[in-house]
Image (cartoon, rainbow, N blue to C red):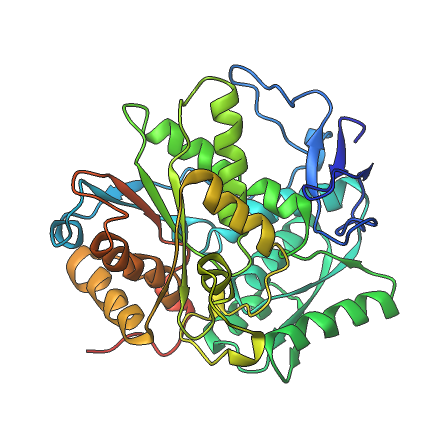
Length: 370
């Protein structure tokens, strides 16, 4: 894998690429993938950290469609509202984009057994792709994770480890288990390869909106892997001349867990202020890549807003009843942010907006009810 190295986006320190490297030895920041041969990628060449094509692990992820939401979009002062149906990925969420790359690199490195921690979607994704790759997996989960997600994780034959306590306790338990058993900790939150895999979201958006990019993209953000990957993908497309300008990227969180919103807007908030949210996929009180996410929001002219729990559940119902899209609450949170951004004038009349439906509604129980 001599065509890549791992680079710290914060202090610039570099180190050789391997599966165990997730944090910069100099400053502790999560690492990114850097390419020797593709930094100035041109034309149709797309950089990938996987050198040996025979090691690639895939279940047909990506190429998810974009649809126009006429009913919900028609209620708001904007141009067209688009949804990118990421729940049509193989395990029902966008996480498959990152997992496919992370597990391909793991396979290329000869990894036989790995550990991951997840509130649900990433655990299901890693379990499925590990099974596909012939790699044994251990998934650490919150004891109160949705039963539907736990059933899906178990279906792939993984070893499930339920952990009591806050989400951060699950991560600590997973890291300790990996260290004690000398296993690879393949974290979707920290792995540079996972974040790298989510870049394909941006590549597809550029292809699908060849006639004109949307002005805004709203993301539900916990650890920010999709937002970070999308930004990096758009940067590559901009460098290659495919697009002139990167869309404004916005972060939406639940008001119950809003570290990024508070930091972006200069508000007081700490992990001790976190409360339970229906949007479990973004219930991250201390994101490991917080500074990187905030930088991206500022660089693209984006915003960070927090939405009420009632607004999330209402939007989940509206998406299903008015548009035929059954989104999990985490996905619905991003759509709930539309009302705030339009009322504040951040999104203006005539602006086109894209929102990814990051996960399928059947993954959370109980579903929204009338």
